[in-house]
Length: 445
Image (tube, rainbow, N blue to C red):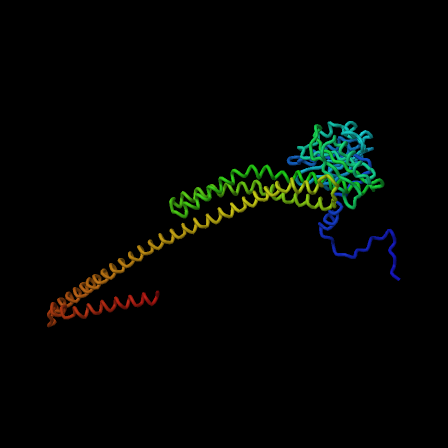
């Protein structure tokens, strides 16, 4: 039998030591669990840009909620926090560019289905001052009402839903296998909020209602975040047109050789700096737009929409309204990248022309050096011939003085005849010695 360890004993370890990231990566799937929403409910959702907003500021603001004065800062390090505040719940989520605050409360009795454009904030769970004091700048504000009703009579249900929106045209979809309806008008009201309405079947579980609310809210927030690249793309359009024209002019001048290399280089460097600056400033925005658009498509797929006769679905609305904006951003990003590549190719062409001109100059310089060396060799040969004559002259002079000394000593010798007879021999010996020296030098080389 295998012995059973006692409760007080240490647990048995069957694995090697954990990687430091194992626990955090494993628990990432549970980092942002869906809310549990009991119908009827009102979710007041505010998303703010958090650039320049610290977690300390957000924690200080959350401490203003009831019974949260002792909220520790460490509880905000996980980017998700749910705070029960009596009869309502506040959910905090921090993302890369924005922070979301969701207040889940009971839907006011006067705002149920059948009401005519009801006032949703006449009994807010949190004080209006707390909402206004959220640190950051508002990027999305949504009032999501969730009610339960019979979905069998579509005509009556649609009439009641349109009355709830004040009789205005709405965008509507059946979700999933028809377990609920989602309706919105994608308009910002006088109170700064846009409204959404979810009508679910009676008996809808709190978990399903929470997942529906999360998908709809994320769909709208990611849509707005994706659109933040559109103003940037429109702003860049004039600069890109001007830069493309300037690059075409530089290329034409390069082809026609109508400007100096230095002038072209200065103009091209200035243009390349402008393009690279624009790329560095906006590449993140364009990448973020692509990422947010991907999330929008995922959320639409997760809704599993079905059309309601006479209305446009949320996915169709997104396709018709969001797709042109995303295409404009994508085209601008591609245009900027293409311009950068073309500037690089033009720089390579100009650099090639400069290199060729430099090689020609170097070749001319080498030719001049070669001619100089040839002249130097000729001069050296001339000097060597003169040096042979000079050395021979000095040797013969020494022989002449030697002959005179011998004659003075009584030797029967004529010094002049003796010296003259030795001139050919001296010349040959000196020439031969010079050639041997040259041979040795060449052998060393």
